[in-house]
Image (tube, rainbow, N blue to C red; front, side):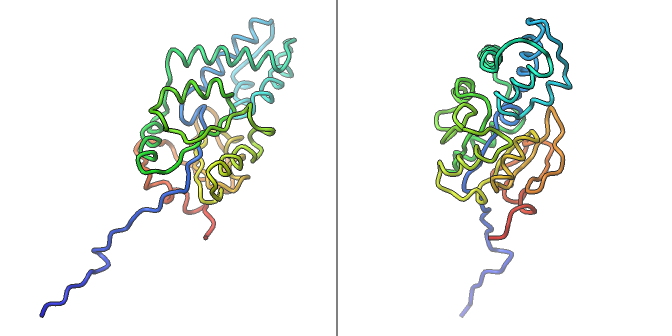
Length: 236
């Protein structure tokens, strides 16, 4: 009589997937930060103000109303916050209509998560008009929900956008993973208790508790995500 057994080496390890992945858009999913910076330069120049990339980099990741007020404060142009927001959105939407510049590995990871049944939510400080245009360039259902800057009371770096996203799918923020590229976005996600992958792009992201830095999403698979954030994830 022969007894069979399964050794530890024969065991199949099933990767743990996050309850949901919460995606930033500008600079993380799509490389639209240059579009925003170009729009700022054009708008300020058209109204006789002065602008530079140092100022522009201070706006990355912020709520649009906050960025608009910073433009007023730093450039001296005499437009209102709503006028600046509308003008910037119009310029960026026109650019996106011509081409959506996906960030390396982002679209591939997003679609893989969908194929595995992991909810993805877009958490962006861009407004719904721009977010919808980007999402329409993806297969239907790529995102389960959108949280946009014109639909929250407090934008990034406040935790509200990420807390709202977790509520939409009824999961604990700690069981999600956020993917961000800016200091404001990373602070928003970590303040909400979401383990965060920071991928600095246009501006550097300082060390922030609750976040792990990587260089790119290129080659990152869904099964890698929980391993990447393991050092900052609270034990359950």
